[in-house]
Every structure is written in C-alpha cells, then in structure tokens.
Length: 214
Length: 233
Image 1 (cartoon, rainbow over the protein chains, first blue to last red):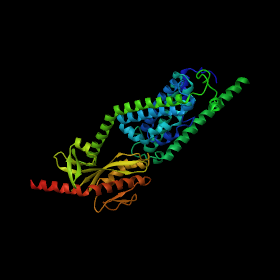
Image 2 (image 1 turned 90 degrees about the vertical axis):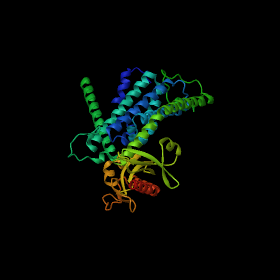
Image 3 (image 1 turned 45 degrees about the vertical axis):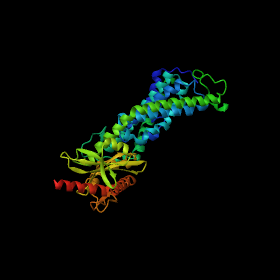
Image 4 (image 1 turned 90 degrees about the horizontal axis):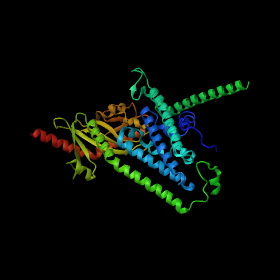
C-alpha cells in the first residue's frame, strides 16, 4: 500500500465525483430509491447519512488503535447505531414533518453499506483528518446524488421543485416517477449518463496519450 | 484466525501490526465500553429531546382535532365512564391511560362534533389516524393521518387531500361505513379505496368502523343530552 500522500482536499473531492457512492460505487441503493420522491426528503436523508458517516469515521479513526480486530465490526456498528439513534431523536424533536416523511428510513441508515464500508475500508486505516475528509466527501457526494434523483423525480412526477409548481396548471405529472419504478428509471438514466461521461473522458485520455507517443 | 488477520496487508503507516491476539478480556472490555458510552449518549439525548418530541406530538394532535372538525375553535377531552362520556382535564387524561376522544366546540361554545382517534395495522406498521364525526348530522366530516409508515408514493396516498376530501368530508355513518373499489362510490356511506394502496386505504376504513363501533353510543347519548340542555334553556 502506498503511503497516503494525497492532499486532504483530494480525499474530500473524490467522493463528490470520481468515487461518488451512488453514481460510481452504486452503494446505499435502499435509501437512494426509497426516499428520493421529493427534493426535501432526498436532501434530508442525504444530510442525515452524511452526519452519521462523518461522526462515525471520526470516532472509528480516533479509536482505531484501541479497537481489537476481532471485534472491530461490532464496535463500528455500535458507533454507527449510536449516531443514527441520535439523528433520529434530534430530527424528531426539531423537524417533525421531515422526520415523519422519512419514516422507517432513518433507523435503516444503520445498515447503509456506504457507512460501514467507509469505516472498514478507510477510517480504520487512516488518521483522523484524512478519515473525516473522506467521510465528508462521501457524505456530501451521497447527499448530492440523492438530491439529483429527488429533483428529477419531483420535477417530472409532481411538476414541482421543493414544492413550488414549475409548469403551470396544464402539466400532467408523470406519476410513475414518484412510484418505485420511477426511482429505478431515474437511477438507470443517471448511471448511464455518468458512465457515458467516464467513457468519453477515457477515450480523450487515450487519444491524448497516443498523440504524445506519436 | 491469524490467517484472517494477515489476509489484508496491514498499512504500515496507520496500523502497527498487533504482535499477538488480544485477550478475551480486552475484547469484552472494548465492546462493553462501546456499549456503555453509546448508552450514555443515547439516554442523554433522549432525555433532552423527549419534552420537545412530546410537545410536537401534542401540537400535531391539537391541530388534527381542529382540522377534522371544521368550524371548531376549541376542544375538550372525554373518556368513557360507566358507559357515559365524562370530561377530563388534560392532566387527568394523561394519567388515566384510557383511550380518550375529543369534543370540538365552535367560537360560541356549541358542540361541533367528536374527534375519534384510532389505529390499525397498515402495510408496514400501525397507521394512527383521527376522524371527525358530527353526531347531529350523522356524518364523518374529516380525517387525518397522525402517524404512518406506509410506502412512499403508494400507501402514503392515504395522506393525500385528493383521497380524503371526496371520501371523508360528508360520509354518512348509517347504515355503516363500507369500502368499495375506486370509482365505485354510489352511496353516502361508501369510501373508495385507492388503487395501488388497497391495504392502506382499507386499514383506514377498518379504523373508522372500529372507532364508530366503540364510540357511537357514547357520542350519540352525549349529543342528545347537549341538545336537550340547549332546548331546555
């Protein structure tokens, strides 16, 4: 393994785009499909997940020398579950409407594989600033991806953005976009878009490399 | 066990390779401590947020009562005692542990109707709702979901005004509430279920049927008594 030499900023940025949890790693699909039927829900879910991810990574990284390997997963789960419960309680106290809308999906953040995955793959092997930068990047990337999905589904499925009507009274909403198939369709098209971007970039790079060698 | 440890190459910078297996005691202590601090954090935040969460719930219930009884400005809590409705103040109501109902009054203090809370298993979890019943006109005049975890986009359409307005604004309670398929409502006592949310919408109808069965006699007796008292003046 090469010594970690990437600047902290890169550690943060990779989660936004190059290693985006939804569009590239395709992790955390359950909330990505289930609660992205409106921008508000998607954003709230993304921020809640981001908060849990950053806090968990901070503690896992700080405690990485004290957690014995055989019980590391159980310890990570305890840490993650603690922050999920705190998030659940705080959302219920401060924004009850959002909390009601997200319903069962807040407790389910515990089993979001993105979070446990970052603990095992990154936070447990890296110093605190690096772990937090990575978690923040992945969390923001996750929230960004969910918000994209939520925006597409809300605009097409309800004709609104953040509840504000966009198209006037003659727009017939595509109700399917709010239903589960709409989640799959939107995600499919977004993945297609991101893969096309990636392929175009790879082709450009290959062409540039050939140009240099020629 | 040790193969598993060495299967992933330890990162030289971050993790000095453990010289030997940690002792059982250390494993237990680690998990015990994690659990202890987790418990402290959760119980602490729970204690801090509980008053606010309860207040949110109370405010939501109060708003719901006034919404399902159009025209009401205030309400009072009632429970059933010896087959009759008896008023309770809020403090008693909290301690009583008996299921309460709420009588809504208009600005002049006249009885508008009763708000009947209920709950019924839905598609995922219990649906909690509240119905407004006007005993004088013998109509259900409002419905609101208090809490539900129905599927977003499908079952949660029981929350939508598009379903509630045509079905629960003037629903006759005689001869008894009946659920019919979407588009098949022909009589004032029928509720259309939602295509794609049949389980959830049927649960709401069952909740209403049970609430009426439970409270019908009490609210009719009370309303008749109130009417007599009004005429006697």
